[in-house]
Image (cartoon, rainbow, N blue to C red):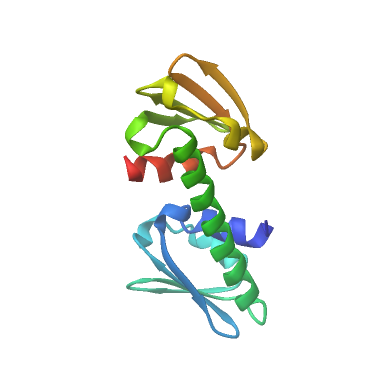
Length: 153
């Protein structure tokens, strides 16, 4: 993953605040849910920041299209991981609760018999199981994945 893209996503209030990403040759244009979640100081380290009613523009220079592409790929990858985890947990309807700490996604499911954890393990994530409670060690994006799951519940 691109470090600049990750830092910009974080400065925009995480992926859940991002509605759309677009760019021209020099500007990154982000449509956001809530402009108050922007960390303007962090964004200014990449270029001039222009707030708009719908979001923010960051003048990055010639690298704007590549950064935009990387942001879209990062957001799509996290959505795909969320979808795969939900499926492995027996579907969204089987998820009773989702929480997270810094690196672990903590899940409580209704029916442990519906679990097929092989796909999660195949993605390289470790899992701690205790009946209908699981901890999936996702790394630094555990909170983002948790938020994605909670939006589906």
